[in-house]
Image (cartoon, rainbow, N blue to C red; front, side, top):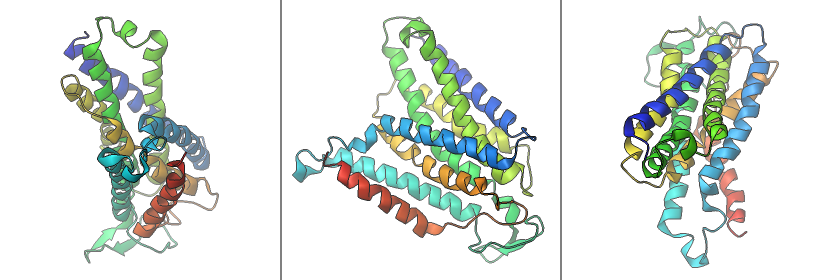
Length: 288
């Protein structure tokens, strides 16, 4: 077996290093227009969603309702609830990120809006919650990845980490995967914070990296000794793709100029209808 220390510190290195490279590099590509940065993240998110849905076993759509009367049993129902919880979590993040339902003109740096608690707060300071929401929910899928990695590392008959995971190509694939996940977060951060009038703070990128990547380290630390069905982590985390696509598509629009217009307030009804739309076609897939 591969040692506990190598498993945990190995996943830490190959996760956090590429994540932070992506976050710092992309957010400093000042010569590339924002809409192209957003378009890059948009494209990456499409594949990420497809890939992670596979890890989420497609919410068991291929075999969940056999027999039909059981609808897949409690495990399938729990998986669906986990997916719905991911959408709900993103709705909560969005509630705090964009608290005003109507766009307004003028610099958002100087605009104030009433928070739902009644006090006056700077609108711009809340925009960091947009990339935080994507990173936090996407990071839950990383928890599953770290957990799976360590569980496999503890079970393999070899102490050679390269041989254990299928050779050099597999070892290269994972950090590249994390590099591009970090790029998605960096694209969202660049569009809604780095290039807006929102205040920039030194903690932004370090915290985004931890939300996205350190969950994999936590998963590895626990998963080395504890077995668990990680499908639930992927089912929760994959929902981040919905929110990332919506926000990045907004930033691709030529008329979208942070500092002059506010991001669109989505509201809980939009997230509800997104979920309804997904599950309508998902229901049809159950009968495949």
